[in-house]
Length: 252
Image 1 (cartoon, rainbow, N blue to C red):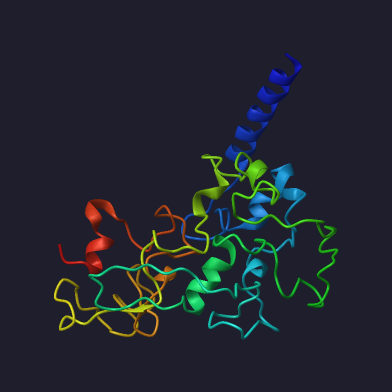
Image 2: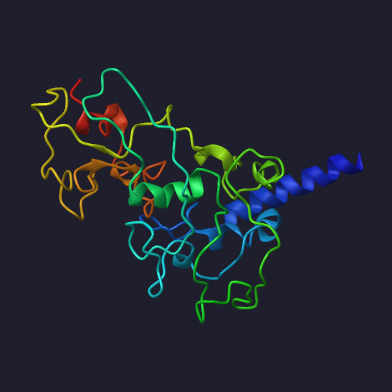
């Protein structure tokens, strides 16, 4: 009976904490990608993720960013292993290994690196042991994967979202069941079932538009996802109602 009461108390506390969290429209602040928003409210994450006290630093640094991948001012450890790629006999363009913009996403979502494992911490830039604004470094880092020794088992219930499922963004390193990335977008001559983009290098609608993007003419993770804008779940660049996102590229 004591266990049931404890569980009930935890459930009520969790719902109350989620309800109290501010989410700001059109911005990363308060979204699932705002790790400062997740950590303080849930004790599981407070023991497995560093609270740097700044929203942007989990991904970006104004100085001392890595040049290991082509991603803007990137401040997160990046994966190095090859991925198992999508394959199909009907492809006109063969997927390659993910480009820099996709590796930026996969540095958390492939589950091989802790989501808080950054290169430069706030302050002097080399104080990865902390403290930051009074917060000390954690002993272990939470990785987005189903390994029970990674801490993900607990985080499946306490990730700070109403769904309480932290693995929903886990992709792993086998990308055969995901939309192909790292591939050059086909021209109408190569495949008439694809729409021609406004710009063959950057995609549709211009740089500030909420539309599908290309990166050097290639399809990458942020072609369809805008990591800074949670308004269209799950961080889509545009609504997929009536398959509108899909039919931007695919003629069906």
